[in-house]
Length: 555
Ligand SMILES: [Zn+2]
Image (cartoon, rainbow, N blue to C red):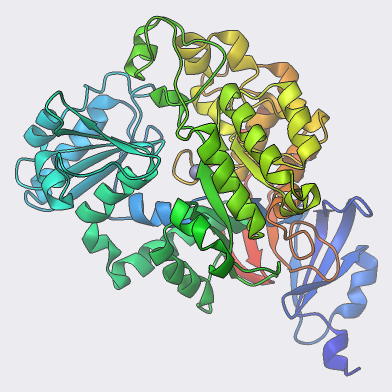
């Protein structure tokens, strides 16, 4: 072997290495050659790998972890909805409804005839926001198409010009799994729900942003947001087929900041052709692959479109979600038969499914669908690691049944941070808020739990998910369900090795072990040494490496 191969390209030493590898949980130094980890061990032993061309990074007491893995992300949606020059009106940016309207008025003043899409309203966190009628939107933007999208991405409100641009009228059928709200005469009111209907309006009104140049720029911006948060791999958990080449091209550029795993929208058409579709059959470390099909079994608690065994509270806020004031609950997007049919077809074709599900009633129906799909070949379903996404109101018995089937769960942990108080005070009461995203229960039933931020629905920050999982604190500082807390070690596993496993990538990423890719996140200090209540403020990402190449640094 030549001397060139005996020395490393990159050595990181002088800090605490948290490997997530149970065989060697902690080390002092890591060496990298050709984008691959070649050494994990003691600082004294790494010295021998140092050559004239080796870059040595002194961690100065910082912590080195595997790059975070966003199990359920939406880089393509981030690119389309919040990348500059988009109008970002999410509650994390526009504090209240007045700020939302001011922001829209200002954009209209600057470009009175341009199409405009404002992303991210949330009437629960922006309670002073008026009801979004087509008339109000026509008044706000009389000279062009205007869309206002909900932060959950499950609803959109269009003005008259936007409906016209999208060619939606009384003769337009509802796309599968979604619908246009209609008045008594059958005319669309401008309000639409769920992915395909929302997407049709977005694409029509924002067609300029879909041009190759602006789109590539927006995707690059979205990738950079991930790198800043320490993320090296993200799923794109519902990519439209025509955006696949854009994502693939973006990961193919020499300075790409993110590895992407795409899940296509699991339409009946895709299911019918799943055998011949573009899914990558063998897990690899490639920067891009299309790997699965995404289904939506229900919607969002913020729009009363989830099916639960418990009622909404009789409150003004709950009524604003569309909840039945007599204590009813939302329904599912598919019938159990439709769901079972889709899951069965994808499973038979060897394509992993990931199903969006919040309500406990919905979760049971998804389990039934998975069980039916498993019947011919239980091991085949298990090997595909079928996923359940978000899991707001899941019970212990349901986690047990999911584990038995081989289904795996990814929790939307920062729901508790941003909406914990709303869940407790406005929607379901403190008991349900305390077991919302019941990570402890899931973990104790043997699940390899992952935590996610869901792209645009909360700021993409794995360290925020970790802090919330450990503290169960909302933005006001209230604690919702202390008994559901994870330890910091568990929470870190949930955003690294567990998420990598859910993406079938545990042989390539998610741990620091020789032979795996050198995907790294550097934190300013070891989170295990920080009091739980200080995690959010005191721990942050200082650098990110993808296959040994620095993709972001605070310096
Ligand atoms: Zn999502």
